[in-house]
Image 1 (tube, rainbow, N blue to C red):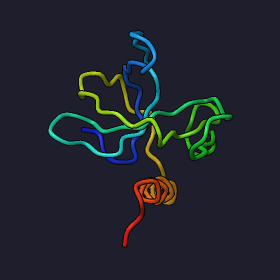
Image 2 (tube, rainbow, N blue to C red):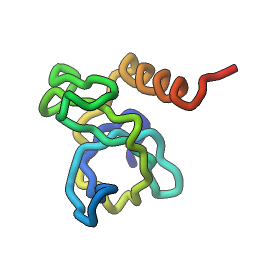
Image 3 (cartoon, rainbow, N blue to C red):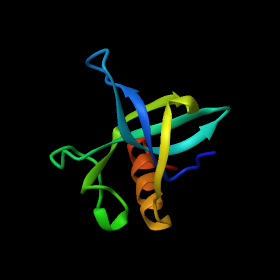
Length: 103
């Protein structure tokens, strides 16, 4: 079982090709065997939330809140680590802001 804030390795298909690769993703939530996740990249030129090696990443990376998708749990290879509560709050606060905020 994977939970919100878990960083996992999963098979994903890129939007610009039919290629499927194993990449790290952040679990936003788990619902009926499907995981809603956002991509993580080591390309630090990308926009998003920084994720450092000190926080558990293999290399300094970016959590890409503009790359959200759903995958079945059978696409998951393994759990890498879980974000701290502080980092999870940063992710969700940024996501809420991108969605238009709360009134």
